[in-house]
Image (cartoon, rainbow, N blue to C red):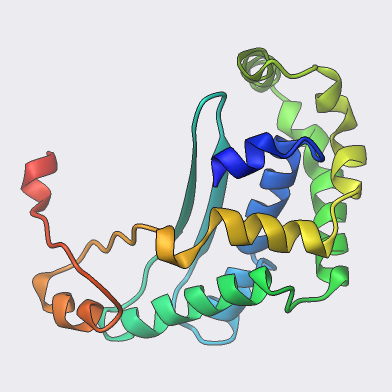
Length: 189
């Protein structure tokens, strides 16, 4: 995914990736929160991160649920990703996220520490500092097709590792969804 995104010179990656992350799981109005919490009561929170570094990147979706609703929760997450990748959402939803992110952007720099961290990160990426100031203009040019394309590349269900922290009784439920590898948490402490 990140090779595809980094090689696409038609957009400013960091800003669009941040917008897609916010759209999917950035707050109460995000797609995942609406589907998982508001409509179904499967969780209290859900989040999304797309982070592109200079030489690598990572994507993360995170949530939690009861053992009894694990399969349903994963199914809803997959459906949300599929729907967004297939442009099954309104352009108005994108406009709302753009307005929210544009309005809240200056608050990221209330502390000097945060501002310096952003400058340091931009140095690492070789990005212009102007992009800090141009953020609202950059994301204003994001459209439904961009959200769909990035979601399809970043959150391809068949390329994701799904990590479930829970007891062994979940194994049979998870095997219905695909291959499962059980590991002991003590091996990682």
